[in-house]
Structures are given as C-alpha cells and as structure tokens.
Amino acid sequence: MFIKHVPDRKGMIIGEGLIFIAIFVLAVIKLKKHLERERYYQQQQQNFLLSVTHELKSPLASVKLYLQTILKRDLDREQQKTFLSNSLKDIERLDYLVENVLLATKLENRTFILPKEDFDFSELIEEILDRLQKNACKSEIIRPQIEPGIVLHADKFAITNVVTNLVENAVKYSPPCANVEVSLKKNHNNLVFSVADHGAGIQDEEKRLIFNKFYRVGNESTRKTKGTGLGLYIVKTVLQKHDATIRVMDNKPSGSIFEVTFENYAS
Image 1: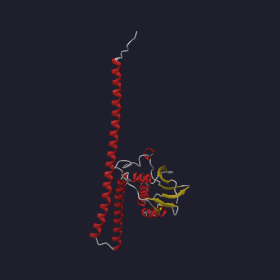
Image 2 (image 1 turned 120 degrees about the vertical axis):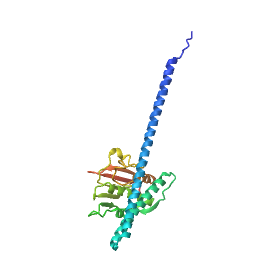
Image 3 (image 1 turned 135 degrees about the horizontal axis):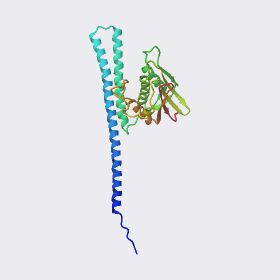
Image 4 (image 1 turned 90 degrees about the vertical axis):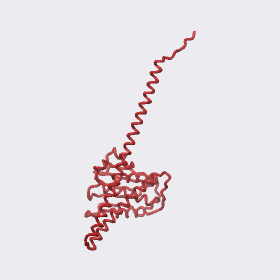
C-alpha cells in the first residue's frame, strides 16, 4: 500500500512568507546603506565646494586690496615691491589650487597615463622646501635630511604635487614655528621619503579616511585650516600610479609621519 505524502500547505505559505520577509529586510538594509553612502558623498562634495569658494575668494580679495593700495597711495619703491611680492604669492596659491583640481580630474580618468622621465628627486625636494620655508619665524622651520643625487623615474609634475601637498599639510597642521622634518634616503632596495610634523596628530579611526576624495576633518563652517580635501587623495592616487605606497603613523610625542616608499628602487 502506497501512502501519498500531501505537503502541508500552511507550512509552505509560512515558509515562503519568511523567505519574502528576509529578502525584503535585506533589500531595505541595502537601500539604507546606499542612501547613507550617497548622503555622505553629497556632504563631502558640499564641503569641497565651500572650501574651494573660500580658497578662491581669499587670495583674490587680498590681491585686489594690494593693487588698490598701490594705485591710491603714494608708496615708495620698497613698499610697492613688498605689496607686489605678496600679490604674487597669492596668485601662486590660486594657480596651485587650480592645478590640484585639474590633476584630480585627470586622475579620475582611468586611461590617463602619467608621462615619466628621469629627474633629480633630491634637487626637486630642496627646491620645493626653499619655496615653502616659512621665514616669519626667527629660524627655518623645515628641517631637511635629503640624500643627494637621487634620480627618480616618474612624472615630475605629479611628484612635485605629492611633495608639496605633504609638506604644506605638515606646516599647516603644526603649531606656529614648530619644526617639520623632511627626509629622503635609500633603504636597501627601497627609496623612502617622509614628512614628520609635531601637530595634534590624526585619530586612528580617521587614518583610513584621510586619503578619500573630499575628506577633511571636522565641519567646513567651523574648520580653521585651509584646504579642499583633494590633497591627500591626489597624493595616494599619484603614488599608486607609480607603484609606490604611503602610510601614516603617529609621531612622538605628538604629530604625524607620512612615509612614502618606492619599492625596488634602482638609481
């Protein structure tokens, strides 16, 4: 005698219902994460627009004031030279901002190839440090330890941007007249470039975020330091295109160390 098994219709309905509920819950969770991610990127882009607006307006207002003063007042030659020199610095700051934005746009294009050449990396760093050195303090605050004669095969413009961003950040986030140590040395088969500051440092949870595009610590309306949130993103992306790595570590007793490594370096 054969006994025909009749499926429990109620159990089947409950089972199908549970599966549907599970799929629905997973879809809601996924949608929520997507919306949170979109909201995060929108906030970062808004911060970027606010910071770029400020970065553009500030030097333009400064240049305008200098030029108006030169036109309206009877200044001696030395005063005119000082005002024009300050105006030139503001224009260079604008130029650097525009170059940063343009480079970030190019790096977004995956087909973009950085043109590489051999150049004296040691000499390039020295030139950048001379330009960024703050002479308002009684002594120079950037302390270089650069091994001479190191030749690098890379995109000179992009690497200039990397060095400038890292050193400017170190100076910007350090207390007034605090030392910034910059070094370049060969370590076995690797080439190591590092920048160390004595600022407030970076929280561990933010170390993995600071290289994200548009990311900046704090809120744009309350933040005191200048910047666009593009600098470290450009640094990391450029280094990736050169098969180089960057890591951030805590400095002692305070501050941060950014260490760039070009592996399998051959001079």
